[in-house]
Length: 313
Image (cartoon, rainbow, N blue to C red):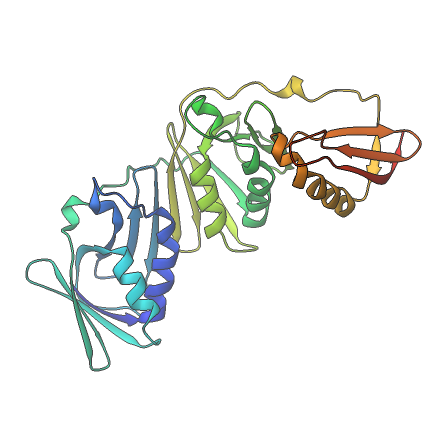
């Protein structure tokens, strides 16, 4: 392999794929990124077996000799971070050794054979849904906090995404909290699609997505593929069925309160300073006189009572 390209372009690719890199003493190849070069392009890939990211570079790339090799993510990320933006030459020597040349500076680093790097399974791209990156990031921000942790109920350790012909829902629950974000849009699906995206994958996808960008989502039996610009993000899905939560949301309410959002958040944060000693249990009382009361109850360090003005009906 022998290529020339701007160092900052490669650094951008490394930063994006880093979301799929893991520390794995038992499988050190997962700590590497794959540099795959053909005559037309260079693809930078990271794969942790649950999630994989591909970043394709074509612009300002000069390919002298194609090839592929893996290199430590920790090394190449640190090296490029310390390098002033410049034209960078990368070529392989014998024994899977990479040589980096910038100006008159040369650095050699031992890599690992690309043959050891895990392959990314192909995802059929016949079931597709288009969406704005802003909507997807907002959906994750409204649901990730209530995902379950641990392996007690694996199907709750992720976000349930359901795609209908006229809308999409994102939902999560840890059996104590239940969150749903619904977005009305015309999708290209003919029948309902339901998947469970692991929490970690959802978190990392949310971090990589840019603002105001169209993304395409492809669904397979046990995988999802998110595509935007020159980036592809693959993720395995959780097996099992998400609970049918529709009936958990009440159809009617006996009390309705309108309160300033910032005041409520501030009040909850204040009472939580004490309630954290009681597993963050906070009692909320809605008074039709126009107040919301928040109480921590008695704990070993004290108690807290907060009143917030509201319109209670």
